[in-house]
Amino acid sequence: MPRMIWLTDCAGPDAVGFFYYSGHGVAVDDDFLIPVNVRSTTRRDLDVGGIKLSEIIAILNESAPRAVHFIAFDACRNNLGGIRGPGGSSRWRKSPAC
Image 1: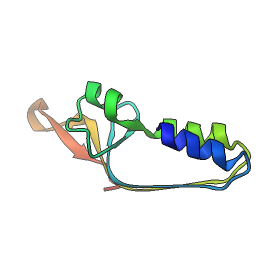
Image 2: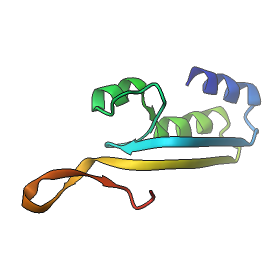
Image 3: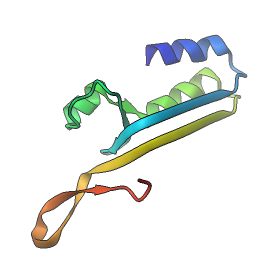
């Protein structure tokens, strides 16, 4: 994230932003992008190593508030909140976007 902040600050307030992500994502109270070095999707590991989509949007908006930002995500997103299956068992559910 520090490199992204540096790049957006250098681009200036009227720059056009384009952010592309291809990989895995997960939803747990927020949407997270999962970098390749994150080995587990526990909440603790996501808080430490995951990247919140809302933080990316906030960085773009703060660095260039008058700019147009394009964000493209090519990611499968799992919902770790799960849903209840037959018999009350919890199971993972893929988002309809996958």
